[in-house]
Length: 573
Image (cartoon, rainbow, N blue to C red; front, side, top):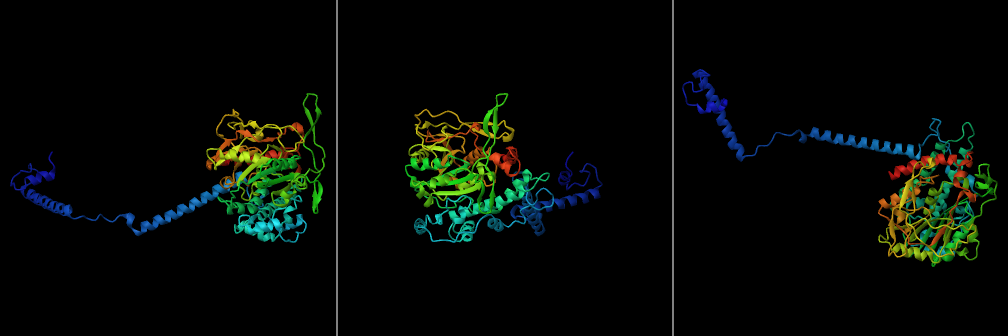
């Protein structure tokens, strides 16, 4: 069938039933006229629109009400994002760091709410010494803008009270360090000491709780987080993504030492300085966690020191029988080193920076290494090791040259598990020839319930001796690594990892790699390490933590670690 308008147009001049007889003549003529008029209007409109653009009808998107609606919608979405983002971080704090504002009784009050940190500080320590004039060494450093932050020195002795011998206005030193106006090693030392003093008082309050209301794991953890956020949080926020102190390009080396009741600390320090080619460029940051015995200083009752689990015989099944006994106060390796006439000047000149804490308040190696890293004040290289080592001749120069031989220098890290030695009375000097290095290239998931299936790293193939450059590897060992000081800017240590023994290595490895640092195995080992099996009967930090809170044995420490491993897994994904 033809289109109606087409048919009408074609029969516009007919007088009969040219329209197919569908309409009478009059009606058909009227209809044809209307169609013709429409056709003429259509053609006229077509000619007009072909030469003149016609504005489209106004869009709703251009109206003011619509724009206002869009703006309001954007604001609502932004508010919703902030709420969800804050909730997510609060949830992370609760499940990984611990909740605040409650001690488990539902009352919303924490045992430290009424605790003033200044009151704790004054209750714990004797009156502060009056500031004196700077020493000759300090006066010379004050004249050098690149070394002024080293003044005043952080005295290495006496234990616990050494920060109170810092000369100058202590409040000003702390505030200038927090603000970034003029950070100093003294300010850092005072901040860390104040944190430890507050934590010491907190632990005493929590330890007073007796059965059936004795302190629980989460209470202890939440008290730590509360104080860490108050004392350490502002420090981390101020210096995030930048160095606290300017990095000196003078080949100086900072050695980070975490020491737990270690009888070899003094010999380790002596060996490091005696075997270094450039001992004047060597600086130590040590965290000494010792048992100081009963009444170690005014106002502190102290504790009776105890041994580790010592093997005393065999049972009927042929297994080792162990016993924990009373013990004298621990040897202080810092005191042994500083009282040695050969090395005393290094202590006097600020090469030995030390912070102390009571062994039953040890927070584990990860937290001790955080503390010691804060005693770095811009040395060119950063080296992290344990406190029971032997050193080869000119170990400092050899590790420096080895780092420079890596293909990624300066963003490279040397790391390995050093070979062991068995001498229980080592003098810190490696007498034998250094061993070829081994690569940290394998790993496995732990099968221990205490370690919550965390990844453990292991050694792989050793060097053959003909390699032209150090080989790249996957992992960093916490017991030894050597890097440029910039490493601490890109991969700062985590201040929220107390009581953690397992997990720090895989976390450190992944954080370094994702921040652009390549890891290499040194081709030779210029240090050796005393590995300490349980048969030696030496104290372990996990045995002391439970004793503080009336929970003898490693069980309470294991509970704390299981909570902290959640943070490790959160960070590594």
